[in-house]
Image (tube, rainbow over all chains, first blue to last red; front, side, top):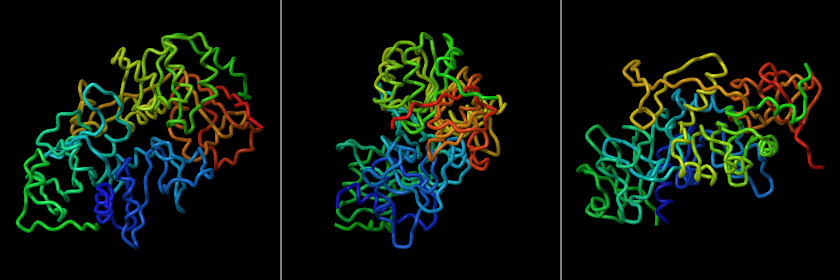
Length: 217
Length: 219
């Protein structure tokens, strides 16, 4: 299995039936493919849908029904179309159980940088609202950017949110951001602790009861 | 009471230096007919308020490339090359907001709220230079209301009083922007007599709307 699906599959195991989630682009969108049996999510698309479904079949989509990436999608039974103010009211008001997103950098204080690289302007979009408003913030990303650590002691890129990240899931392991720092709770059995530490620029707390991450080959 | 008019008459209310709110999220609900027709308008020194400045194929791209727009108030400009060029030439032209903050600023502008406190952006560059205050142990940033001289709004159906039905996720920014400008121009795919839209399905009341313009339909 490739790194992206290893990560998405582990994130999917965190979810419970009926939870309201917002999925960022890339790896987070793969999470929906790996949900445990009996777990159905209510997907919030910040452009204005509660109860978003998957991509529409070619030629069958409605240009008035799109996700936050502008792609035509289907909606699930029980869905609602909402205006932008209500969509972000739902986010700020704490009605989203989990936001799953990617990152350029995450640091040991739970700071997240995922919107702006130095000397480049992309945009914030809904990310700052999501990380400050969702009940749980999960970063789902590859452990390094072509070998360069993305988990760092202090973020150097512009922050999306300060002290907002709860969990980091990479192909190497499952990490919990605590007041004491980042705890490596589970490790992918295909890696050694030394390899994970070498790929990380932050101090990682490795507990004595380090567990194996559930990975299928 | 009949607000149906021509696009020329509606655009005669737009002047140099105006701030224009443009509804839509990427291409969904984008008032493309109004923006495209506006490319021929003589006004300049404009400020555009829009979530993302559209995409490469959006009429916002030639509008921004025309040099008539000086300032962009938005959340994201990844897919509009003309917005990227404007930013490279003059970073100060870009006024970037978190999305929930931008949409709430517009709502506040339309609904008589001068400012509000939001937790979004605390500890980031969004906080810089703004008033902050603590409530119940949490820090909030004060953000101010946003209004415009003109709004461009897209509707699936409008009646002659300006009542609007917006379809699916095309409501996005269109609904709030329709309340937050001095002169609100709605383009509608279909225009119907008053009473034809079920009151249960009116997304935005006609009381906010000044002009309704039909979008030419392809057969």
